[in-house]
Length: 190
View 1 (spheres, rainbow, N blue to C red):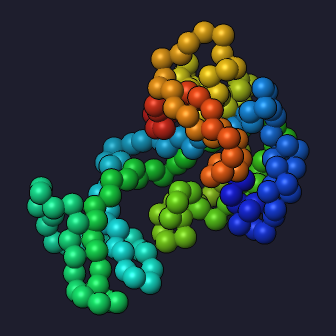
View 2: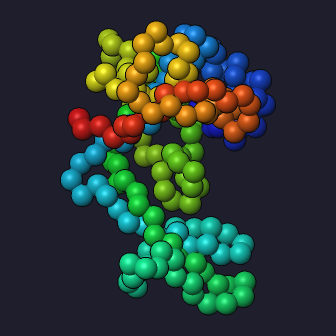
């Protein structure tokens, strides 16, 4: 949601102000989960990234990738293409848990263009947003598993998740890094 506001022209301070008004916080951490992909049958997809000098796009490559080659170069000069296999999850539904003001959260979710790094090029397209109120706050934990990056210093007991130095609050690309527990699950079976 932070990046959706930045993409709409908000400054960092405006985006934080909007997040503060929409989402609850504890220990300076927003009550908002990572995106959880709902898996079904045939959910693994092998897509192909095509890299050109002037743009990046996703497409299918009809040829065969041999085991010792991860990329195939096609053409020369500025029209050359590099096909690289990428593993992806075909998710018809993404679950996102948040605790806060329902209408403001809905507005922020509706502001998203897509999900993922390359949403502008076809992957991560959002078809419909539906909000369902639940009694339990699953924004940090779901089925006793970590549901978002959380700093280790807010826990009294050690957890089983891996620990890495990272940023747990916006702006996620710059700023202080601290030891955080990293979720190991980003798919759910509903």
